[in-house]
Length: 425
Image (cartoon, rainbow, N blue to C red):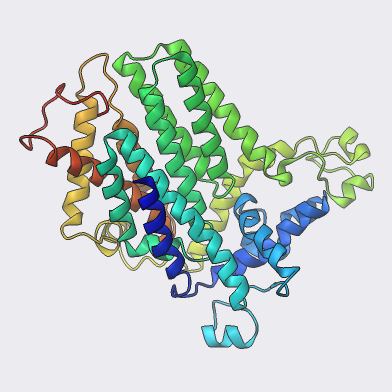
């Protein structure tokens, strides 16, 4: 079944690479991919270059992993077959005018980057199948993949040269490890799955900054669930949580030289001091306060988003909360009656998990909690009414819907009965 998922998803996504409409952000990701890959390969430690001011919002505001995923295959092919592309799309003019001015990537570079995105789309399907299978059975995993591959938003988002498919994959891999964490009984299994959750959260955050708070919410919810159910002791939960947190932060800092102390501004290396660099750091050229750049990045993102909202780029045409739910449940819904089906399925999965008997851990909890955490994230913090920001919540809803549907169909009567399921449920 996993091979079937691989073959079908690859056939659907790699074919769509050539037909998906162009988005102006693809120019930015390809250009910044070249830029940051060359910085890494050259061993450059200049802070001002890692800030990437010339890359606009594709500079330090977006961390490096997603850009490197595009950059390495692009740089490899450019050295052999094609010149490097380096331009940013002008959203104030038409696509034809951007093409005329050379602001749209050439076909070969565009398809190379899109193939990378599509490959992560295939991995998303495999992660969905694995999480659904682990939470219930193979049919739940297959249904989740089928519902996802039939969704236009997923096809478009994973076949453009943008980082959404890689971000979604690491989030879905986090769900897989979270399900295993809820099933783990031995101490070694708890720690291994905690490590896996931290690794996936760090990798997701190294693509989009929301990966770490979302990963912390998902894993923290699973820890709390096991404590309430009495299936893990507080000491082991604390140890697993600490391991996950340290791992995720190590990944974030390791993959982002912008946070390293070796990258310091030229004026600091010249002997000038600033209010953020110690005198010792000024003499050595090391910025030992560089670790603060990561938490400060959240504030910089907020100010950047607020500036775009003030400039009228948010695309809200009415009340934000009403339009958000209309987009989430209707505009991006691909199933008749989805506006009711997904909320009911989410309640059903939570019902099964919450009302389990004492001492029982239901592996459905991470599936439902992941969906709810993504929903709360966009409900509370979504600034732009842009389709790709809905993608993780939409796909999480597909996984919840698949688990609930297969469980109901497999029962003699469609009424939840606590305590009568197989251990795999």
